[in-house]
Length: 399
Image (cartoon, rainbow, N blue to C red; front, side, top):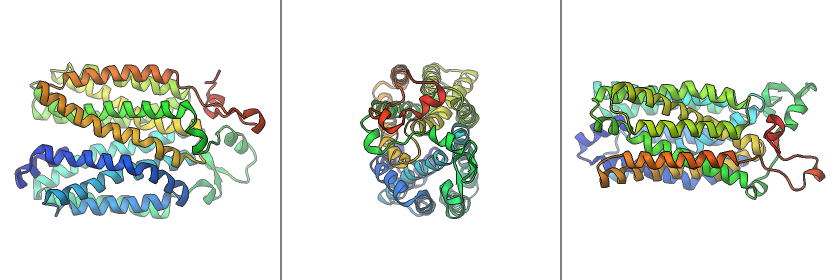
């Protein structure tokens, strides 16, 4: 969106608030639809959800080329944003959670490395096309890339491991060694059971808080750097550094969450994010802008990777789609609220610093909350022969 705001406003005479409002609308739609998407993922399979959502994403982005009336723009961009924020995000991470147990963190890190690569590459591609032939052609190119890169793999490759004759972590169904042991480490919770545990809501609330911090800071950070007296080139470079560090950190957090208790890793991510937000709010030089953007981007890699792993480790694979669908509105709703909050703070006080300070305090609260988010326990664990704390059993994180 940030690449398109200026040329669209110049060409169509729209205000920047009008253009950016489409992102909040899409986020709110994603908040409402996420529970349904989670249910559809478990009921009809990841392939159906991903194929339909990728198709809708690609076509709606291409339609933005002709969306020269505000209502048409809001409908098309709202569909695109909601597809990306809900079914594609939930479906891809659920697929990884079902294929991996022992290597779940590292696999999720690779997944969101590709997410960060897109964050880096797509604005660059769009900028080149805009410079050569205009913003309308840029929408067409981006939509075509989505369809070309994502649609066929979603149709032909995506499935559950059992459908391919495998068990999680790539083990053969016929392989006796290790297969049953690994799967016994993965708990089995239904949605009805999970919603009665404090752990589910604490993780959901923590996820909502960190995504509030991310959106409220990141969407406005380029403008903040300009307000601090930095030129356009530095602000753009800082945003790119943020995206690149997100990708690199995704692999690190994925590696770490496979080796340490997930709640402590999640808390560490929140610590880094809190420090990043607090420091970004003080940046007034090129070195500080780049360094603090790198720190903030590193924490964003963590919030992309660690929460999906936490939900899967705590509640297992069987109902992970519907569980993610119920909890994802905390993240998408938090993002939509935070973007508007930062804008209101700036319009009221003429600065983003009060917003960044608020986010830093929220981050500190999130850290404390996560430290008390223990794995859920079953009251009937003895009768069912289950501890109900797959992550605790695997990481030694229960007591």
